[in-house]
Amino acid sequence: MSILLLTSVPREEEAMWLNSLRASLPKEEIVLPDQVTNNGSVDLAIVANPPQGILSTLPNLRWIQSLWAGVDALLDDPTLPEAVPLVRLIDPTLAGSMAEAVATHVLALHRNLPRYAQQQRKKLWVQHELPLASERHIGILGLGEMGLASAMQLTQLGFKVRGWSRSLKSVKNVQCFSGDEGFAQFLQGLDMVVNLLPLTGETQGILSKPLFDQLPKGASLINFGRGGHQVESDVVEALNSGQLSHAVLDVFSREPLPEDNPLWQHRDITLLPHVAAPTNPRTAVQIVAENIQRYRNSGQLPKLVERAAGY
Image (cartoon, rainbow, N blue to C red; front, side):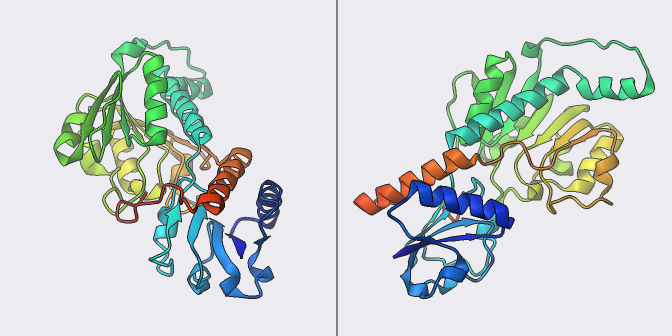
């Protein structure tokens, strides 16, 4: 049996993944689509933005391993085989990288760096009052691996941290809320809201006017989740009205963001090209290889995606 590497990434990047996987799994035959002579010979697939339709043609496919932490695009594929288990990348390195990005931009907003950058362009020398970190309330939407790591990082920096998740969590030094009943209470009094939710039918468009209107006037937004979480027109409207003072946006419904998109030019937006927590190829390959070796040795599948939940 063989393993299919199925991607839509640039050819050079695909070659890097192929070579690294072959080096880490020397006993496995890892092939690209044009090297498959018998679809029935493929029992595992490793995917990164895979083209639609190919996975459904593999009759003996046992499970699918994603090279990304997010699987919303995969789950949106109508040709994805329903009965085949799906595994997303769970990499502690990603969680650490996300916590680093969250801390970086929370600190930048806390220290008024966007405001001072605007003043620099105008040659204005104006100092602004700086509250203590312990006086700032930071809310994290999503308490999965990345949310937990980010919450811990922020508490170590002295911020007051809240977290909201679908089911109630218990996290040291973090005030936790859950479900619809806890959502409004979670938002009350926040200085910043950080989105790290998975994209599901329930969370689609969550960063929109109804949420912004529940925040204190002048709060800030950091979206490191998915572009589908934010309603871009509502973000712009909230910034223009002053309901939001600043937005850090790393993800968009269409990527790369078109050059004519007005978000590029908005004075109160820090725009990033989906770089908050990029997959680390070295650690990702190691984790994928361990998952496959464990399966070959014991038949044990890695932790599976709950398709109904979306992660």
